[in-house]
Image 1: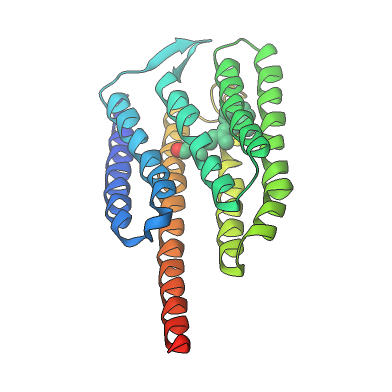
Image 2 (image 1 turned 90 degrees about the vertical axis):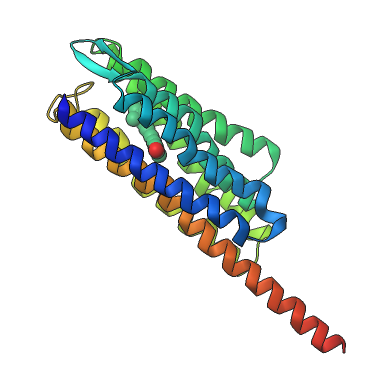
Length: 236
Ligand code: RET
């Protein structure tokens, strides 16, 4: 168990550092996007609490003969809907699609957790429901929400939407694979290895998402300032 504590502590440090960098970034993004930007700080911020608790040894229950980290699922339940909410807000998606996206993502995590604490074969059925719901998330991100982005955003913003969406879809697809290979599924990957992979992914997905968005939002800020300057000059 000592190794797992080490991974959790590293996760805690990664999330702390990431949150600090992103919090600093708040002052660098244009004022009109700051409210939305807060989501990007909250995502690793919530993980700080989760990792601190897990590093201290809280939050694991024994179920079906293996440890299930309840706090990790609570973290995902809170943060992954915020991630997709950010994408929907960025895209200027309508309320209906935004709600669908957030709810589907939250339910994905609920079913994954239910599967992890249920004996097989029901566990696999619950996993399959979770996977189908996540399929719905991907469908919306490439369908209606991408269409909204195309009709409301500038070219630079559309490319930010696409980058963040692809980043999310590709990296997040590793989570169900780890679930399947790990203790809740086939048991081919031990709990320590699965934890290491998940900690690494958690930091990269949360902090990486924030930093990509921060850099793009800073650029957009300076682009619109240049635009304003040009308009002022042109107006002179
Ligand atoms: C589960 C199992 C059920 C099917 C699917 C899953 C997907 C989980 C995802 C988690 C993402 C977590 C992130 C955490 C960041 O810190 C619940 C494993 C599809 C997509 C991004």
